[in-house]
Length: 146
Image (cartoon, rainbow, N blue to C red; front, top):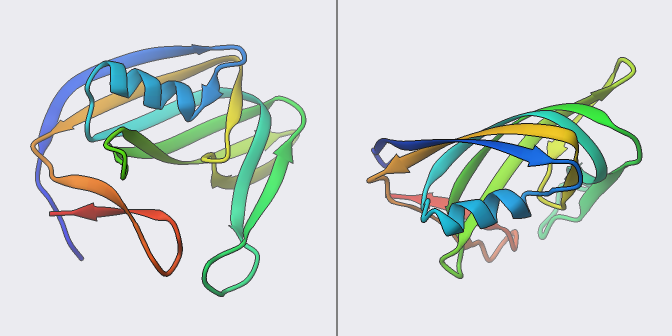
């Protein structure tokens, strides 16, 4: 395990509107407000897009399994913001989406849209050293700390 210590800086409350694309709109907000590292909490609705629900096989590089969102779903999600290889905020966010008693859980990185409203809290973490660095084995930009 590797770790980096920081402290909570600014706290932002966002209301995402119907059709806003996640994670792009949160990353754009973070860039505009110079948030380098942060924790993201989201609740609300998701209307469309795709969710990564796991690698198809246990081999590298992984082949993503995507499930489409074709109707509004409730969502609760958590994520970590850190600068990517290009120095811009990169949000890794996983959520549980539910509809009619059925739930799917996965990564929202492929892009989903807010339905009606999604409420987001961003906790800026100041002083922590963290970045997303491309991993040669998986091809993913993985969190590196310290």
